[in-house]
Amino acid sequence: MITRHLAIPAVVAGTLLALAAPTAASAHVSASASSSAPGAYTVVTLSVPHGCEGSPTQVVTIDIPESVPSVTPTINPLWTVEKVMVPLDEPVESAYGEPLTERVGQIVYTSTTGGLEDGFRDVFALSLQLPQGEEGDAVEFRTTQTCTEGTAVWEGEDVPSVVLAGAAEAGHDASDEEVSDEEASDDETATTTAAEGDVSAASATTTATGQGDVLARVLGVLGLLVGTVGVALAIISRRAARASA
Image (cartoon, rainbow, N blue to C red; front, side, top):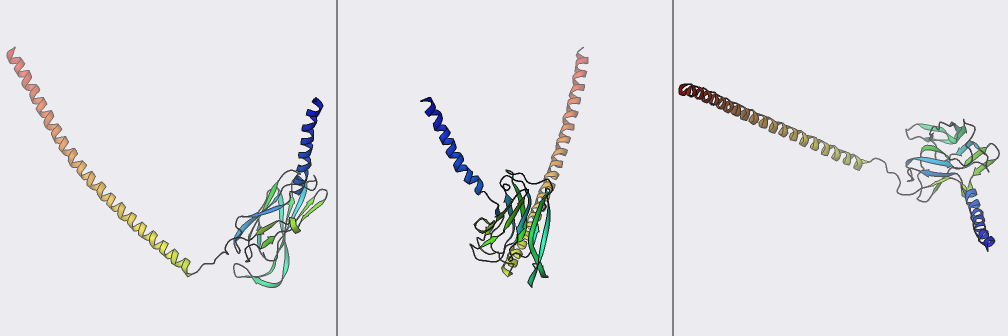
């Protein structure tokens, strides 16, 4: 009976471990974005949660899709970072109006601390503009983990990606300028009102101060009269006392 009671927890524990093992193995490099709207300027963050079957990660290579011509990688103090440029078939216009003849093909992070140990997580952030597209389109960032022993390539069904969602980012137009003008007008009105309020408050303060000065003078005069009367009464009292004596 005792043996049977001990065996049941052992079987349960073994089952849980068996179920947990595939879950741990299925963890992979993932991507998230601060904004996923088509055409939005965003920060895509790739998370590396483990090594290659226990081996530390030494290099993380992120492939940039052709639909994203320009990328600004974030500095990670534990890694060096390199932009690998590739030529464009045809020049494209940049956000600043200048033609681009090459684009960022890869971002390569290399460990400076001996590698990211298995079981520890690090993140790599890329600032970029998402391509214009339809809601539901996936922007894929194929990623390669090069470890001390072995390599893991995250592509296909496991590729880190950002799925476009929401309305496309709109440009500035006349309506925006009208709104800005209205806001500026409101600000000017509020400033004028506040200034008028300040003047009124100053006037009220001056009036109150003047009234306070008059009251203080009246009280001062009354105080002198009361003091004079008191001195006079004291002299009369002393004279009366001497006369009676």
